[in-house]
Image (cartoon, rainbow, N blue to C red):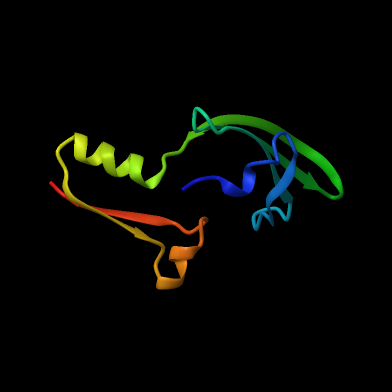
Length: 111
């Protein structure tokens, strides 16, 4: 997967997920900001988890992690270099996905 949607949104906080905890009715918000290095193919991700109860904040936490991505041909070459053969790449799950650069891709290989 390539983070196409995040390119150009560097350092902009945006709501990624929200929900209500069934156990206590607290509202949970997860915000995310990314910085994408397209040369190194690395994304630095900051996630802010916030919990609100009765209209006020009760907990906040900041987490960071990194995501490395590969293009289809790079991943296929890596599989071949470690002994896989007959590597095939399928784009998405339907024929219409082939034209979509954001579609997921699947690699099938034999060892």
